[in-house]
Image (tube, rainbow, N blue to C red; front, side, top):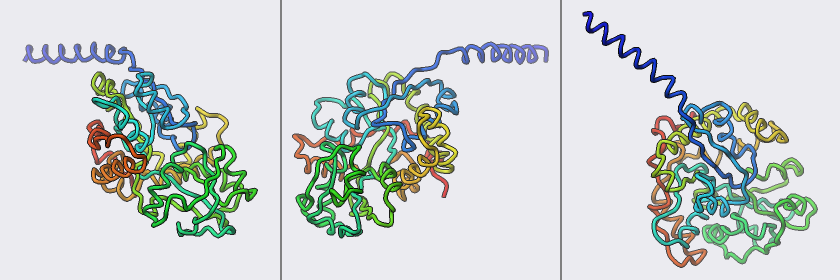
Length: 340
C-alpha cells in the first residue's frame, strides 16, 4: 500500500509539473487573409478570437482584410498566408492553371450556397422571374464573382447570357446608380446589399438568387495551405474547431456576436451587422448543412460545379474535383449541426 501511495504521489507530482510546461508553450501563429473587409459576414472569426477559442486550441491567428477571392487564394498559394477565405469557383479556376499537387485546399465550407443575387427595381419591370431581366441594364464591377457566374445562372434559368446589358460600375457606386435610376438593377453578394436596403424600401426591389434558379454553387470556404496541413495538422484542426464553435454561437445569437466584430472594427454599426449576418446565415445554414453539418459538402455538387465552371470559363484543363477539398480536419458531425 505504501508503494501504491508513493506511485500515486509521483504521478500527481509529474502531472503538476507537466501542466505549467504545457501552459508555457508558445502559441502557434497563423496568418489568415479575408477576401474583403471586416463585417458581420465574417463574425465567427472575431467571436472565436476575442472569446479565446483560438487561444484554447494553442493558436494565435492574425486576420487581414483582402481585395477579393483571387487575391486571397494567391496569398495562401504563395506562402504569404497560412489560411484564407475565398470562393470555390475562383479556387477551381486557380487549380486549372496549376500543375502538380494543389498548393491549397478548402477545409471548411462556410457558404453552403454562394450568396450571388441580382437585385432589381420592381418599377422597372423586374420581378422574381429571371426572365424579367431580359434586356435590362444591370450594374456590376468589371471583375466580380456574381457577374462572372451569370452565364451559369442564365443557363439554369433558360436564358442566354447576353440577355442582360451590363453596365460596369465601381462596387461603391452600385447603390447610387440603382437609386438614381441609371440602371435597372445590380449584382450583389446578398449580404452585401444591406446598404441598398437601408436607402431604398426592400418592398420596391426584387431579389433574384442564383440558387433559386437551380444553380447550386458553393461559395466562400476556409482555405489552408497544403504545407500547413502537412506540417501543422493540429493547428488546422484547432482553428476549425474554434471557428465552428463560434459560428454556431453566431447563428444562435447574431446580435450578441456583433460586439466582437465592433471590437475589431469600431466603425461598424452592431445592429446593421446583425441584420447582415442574418442574411449570411441563410446561405450558411442551408438544408444541406443542417443535414450533413456545417463545413461539409456533397461530392456530386462539387463535381457539377467543377464541370460548370470549367465549361463556362473555357478552362484549359478540368481540375480534379477530389483535390479541391480536404475535409479530414472537420470537427465531428455532432458538433457541426446548427440548432433548429
